[in-house]
Image (cartoon, one colour):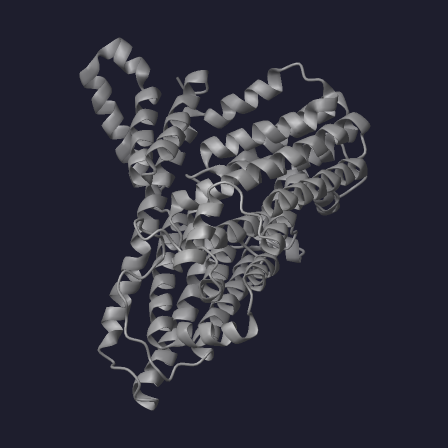
Length: 527
């Protein structure tokens, strides 16, 4: 059943379950089992139920094992992310114990006095922390949460701001883990089709203004913050926080939130929050460049460094550095200021770890289902539809945008979609009109980010919820309308780009429609 129309059944079942039940682990569990069912349906028909069930259990076990062990070695990518999340939870707990969160919230209340200002601050942080989306989602959440909480901004909106600035800014930044990965894919595409008028880096830079979804998504975040555009279920969350002060739905568990109130030092300062976060940033960014430099050969450039960097290893090293600084500040509170008891040390560690367990459980399930969907070759099937179809070349960009979006949505991975769809887009453009090569590649990148934004099994979606301290499904359902509207606007822009062959006209069209949308919604809300 791999690589056939049946391969899209498990992703559809999972996504429907998520929407209908709002129970993430149950939905992912059903998706895992249904993936294994479809993967081995031929065994049921040939060898009977017993052999079928045995193969299903074996397949699920192998996929679970692959989360931790791959190719006979530890799967450091996944293990390091889990360790980083645990360390981040511990850092958060000790920042709270040391009084850093309280002090920073009080300071921020004096400096950032409006809800708009709090949202814009989170958006700006999301834009300027562009090295990696994982780090962006978690670091921006740590800094912004005390400020948005104090200014009565719902956690769902904070998660939306984080998610809609992390991946979009990383996918257009050449100095990021995403940029390096994409440039590495573009290079052989250009070489294969004999394109010599621009280098992979210059091609990437030319693609940036053609990434229409990213343009709209980032502008949408700013418009939502400035004009308080609350669409769909986002209005429910924003109305609740304004009337009750509850930043989350009290009946739902949230990701990355301390389960128990911990004692807080009354002598804590803003530095007790700022220094650990700064150490986290410096440690992670420094590790990214160091690991990339060590792995680079020949002529070392920034791009080659980022292309070869160990992203998750760098997150772990940065997390450890941040934890050391946090621990030092905690001990200062204990012994120098006599503000708290050293016996809080084990309690802080335990509560910090517990705060991250729900997010880790969801990630584990998501990784398993992504592995099974990969075995089903769902992405390959969707890509094959595009490759074999007789497309009107004018509609190539918008069709690639839609297909990449569906693929990323179904598989939960934008990077996997890049790897699958970019070469196919290059082949189709080269065979029809080489002038559409860059727009086609841009459309794939844009669609991949759009699908990733909508997918509840995407790790960036899960980590954005974790960073914001939001319930995952609340984040998915509140972000969905904004992502779909942004995609529709970008889609129209891609139609114009394809029909006219002008990237500038496509961008102008997109911006004009976006402005009309914002003015319309703003006037409707005022009425």
